[in-house]
Length: 135
Figure 1: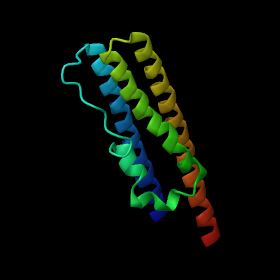
Figure 2 (figure 1 turned 180 degrees about the vertical axis):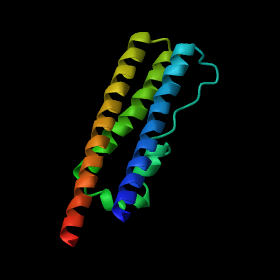
Figure 3 (figure 1 turned 30 degrees about the horizontal axis):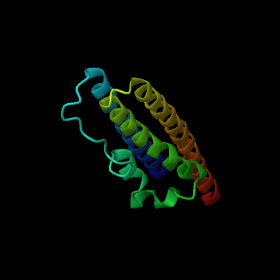
C-alpha cells in the first residue's frame, strides 16, 4: 500500500509540475496573441518554475541516476530559452523569428512530456523491481 501511495504522490507531483510548464507556454502565447508588449515580463528561469523546483529539489536525489531523469534538463531549459527568445523577437516585430522560436519551444516541450512519461514508467518499474526483491 505504501508503494502505491508513493507512486501516486510521485506521479501527481511530476504531472503538476508539467502542467505548470504548460502555463509558461500559455504566458508566451498570450503575450504574442494579445500583441501587448507593454510591461511584458521575463519568463521564470528553468530553475525557478515549478517543474525546475521539482527537478532540482533534494527530494529527487534518488532519481538522478535514472536515464530518463537525466534527459529532462536539456529540453526543459530549451522550453524556457525558446519561449523567452520568441517574446524578445516579437517585441522587435521579427515575426518569422518569433514563429521559429515558438516552434522550437513546442518541440522542446513535447520532448519533456515524452521523457516525463518514460520517467514515470522507469520509476514505476524500479519500484516493482524493489518490491520483487523484497519478496
